[in-house]
Image (cartoon, rainbow, N blue to C red):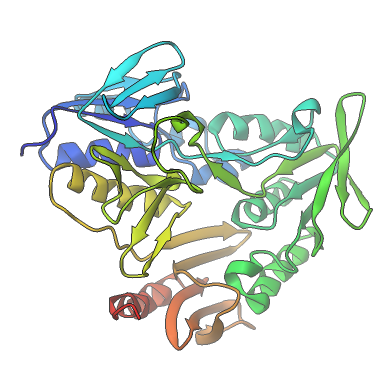
Length: 393
């Protein structure tokens, strides 16, 4: 198959690696370079807040590919050298070490950076969890902690709270929503998730924002709430969102608006594409731009990008999907449920903690959520597919 003379993929995580592999799988035999900011070979992120943090997996198990498989990719892999600039006209990426890498096609797959609280960098005992090194640093801190506060009531925050509690830590979960994941799950299922955490001993301090950290002699002592209360802690994990890693694109002329803005083919400019968490693209079936932060999207979008690089002219119109494991509960979501939607239990029951919920907005199915019912949830996914296939008003 023909294609550009060379492809440079900036970002060596799931989306970046998947793009490179999809190109080769589709028959591309041109030059291929994978550039990563971290020194680790490509690894998987979902286990970081669960298996790696709890110690049930060692770091080797997170590798996305073994060395022999990476070699078969027949590509140049440059690690530990973050991109610092992009010249769109010449399609040249500059790196922190001074390299200038040019290619006919460039894929931006630089992911996210965790948001932080003011003064966070001045205190020890405050952690984020985005990278493998973050997880490895947090684990011993949790094992030694007497009081842990998790700042963030979303997916990552609740996953860390569940893992930390299972490790024996005394955990408080803080965030502005009235219930965990309320903006996505709605109040009833958000409250159910809150009950699950409370039953396992997590203290919930929700419905109030965290305004800052408290500390003494350079060490964190707790977090401050906008009610004026303080939650004591010797370890704090800040997990209240992330921002797309696009600062290196400043001055490039590319449009950045909560992510690299792309068209429906994931194309930001001629010969430049976005993939994974960093990319905001036009979803034709939904009639809106979208940016998704999950593992499934990283792979699916990479496949679409590879196809378009090779001239297939393929719009990217996925059914969004993510999952989360917390305590003994597996939650799977297809589509885009939200807190304003009408929620109906269509299989099982909430009392048994095994059910599928359907989310409808303006009479149209927006998503389905499975709670310990993966098979039934997959079957209900078709309802979301049918809704996406309907004409956009």
